[in-house]
Image 1 (cartoon, rainbow, N blue to C red):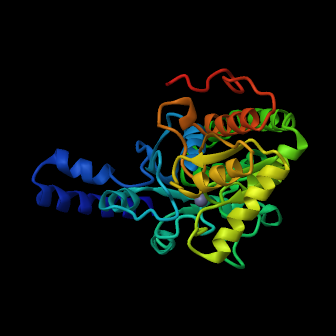
Image 2 (image 1 turned 180 degrees about the vertical axis):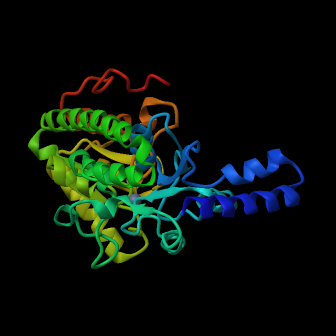
Length: 332
Ligand SMILES: [Zn+2]
C-alpha cells in the first residue's frame, strides 16, 4: 500500500514539475486543498451569527470567512462571484438553513454533494423549532434569538470540524466549552433582565418576523409589520389592531431593525398619537444581521445584549445602559 502510494505521488510530482516549470509552483499546487497536515482548515459561513460561533470554536487553528456582513438581509441575499470562489475553495461550509438563505439554498445543497456542508439551524432539536410565519409547513429560521436553543447546535459543529480536522479535535472541544459558558451567561442575563419589563408591556413590534424565538424564550408577544400594506384594507386593519394594542396596553415603544427598512413603524406611531398615546421608537434592533465586525455588537453575545438591553429599557424594565458587561455602545 505505502510503496504504491508513494510511487503514484512521485509520478504526479514529476508531471507537475514539468507543467509548472518550477519546483516552488509544484509545491504550492501540492499543498493546496483540504486535508494536508500543514493546511489550516478554511471554513465559510453565511450569517455572522454562525461565523461567530465557528470562529470561537476554531480559535487560531482555522480560517473563518463570513459572507453576509453588517446590514445584510439573508432572505434576499444573492451570492456574488467572490462568494462562489470562496465557497468552492472552502473545506467546510456552515449556513443557517430552514430556508433563511433562500436565494442560495440550491447552491448550498449542490455544494453539499462535494464537501461537508452543515445547515446549523437544522441540527437544532426539531420539537423546539417554531413554525414559519411566511411559509406553511416550514420552520421559522431565526433560531439565534433564543440563546439556549441556539447553543444546542455547537456540539454538531465541533463534531463535524473534528472529523475533518482530527488533529485539532481537543482544541475545538475546549474552545466550544468556553463559548457555551458565554452563551449560558448571556441567556441568564436575558432572562433576568427581560423579566423586569412590566407584564402588560411585554410586546415587541418590529419590522419583520425575526423575533418569534425571542418572544417564545422570554415571554414576549411579538408582531412583525413588514409587508403590511397601508394601501390594502387588510393591511390597514392589521395596523389599526396593532395601534389598539399599543394604546390599550400602554406599550411605549416599537422597534426598527438594522437590516430592514420599514415605513409602517411611522404609521403606528402616528396612529397611536392620534388617540393620545405616545409611542417612541425604542431603538434599533439587530434581527438577521449583527453589528460591525470588530465591535462588541458585531459578536453574538453583544448583538443579543444590545437587543435585550434596548427592549428592556424602552418598555419600562431595568437594565444598565452598558448592558450585560458594560460594553454596549463602546464603539460609538
Ligand atoms: Zn429574517
